[in-house]
Length: 220
Image (cartoon, rainbow, N blue to C red; front, top):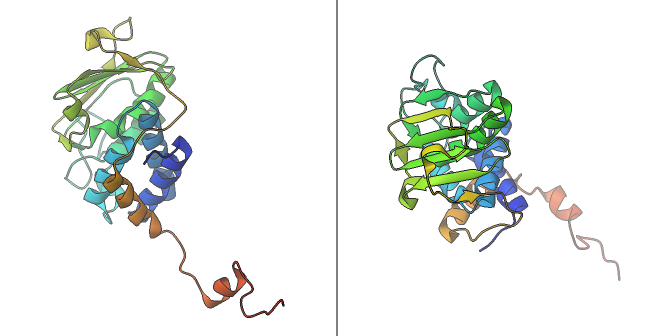
């Protein structure tokens, strides 16, 4: 299926909420899925995988415990890319180094916000992949496609990029934002739908009678 960018964002937000994220971080999840999709990257797939891994766990467990030195998660496990990304974006950090981090692809949208705040291109790297993001949101990738869907990176580094905004990305082709969606893996989309369904209020007798149709009233 090929959902629109609006559909990707809305589904990502509800799915994250259904997995136990607070509404603020759930909104960031939807925006991250949209940002990646607009650059022809598997945002919904990465988000579906992350939510399946952390379903029901408190978001705070994956947030950075401290911002000095190498970032580690409060709960002792891998960092959550959405929680870590929110910190990066809020502080406009141009440099950071993390320890274990889940689904690092989901960190890239937050780096775009940090690059805008810093007013310079930022480079982010984990084993097998390096990305450069400019303040206008243009993304260049250098690395294997499989590395983009890495389940867990042992470390991720963020630093200012070279003056040409590409640095060691070499001949990597920039990915400017586009305004339409991309095909999404059906199983990943179904996983998001299952989580999103948890946010829907169950129907009551009153809501059923007040819904479409005549209910118990005979209009003939």
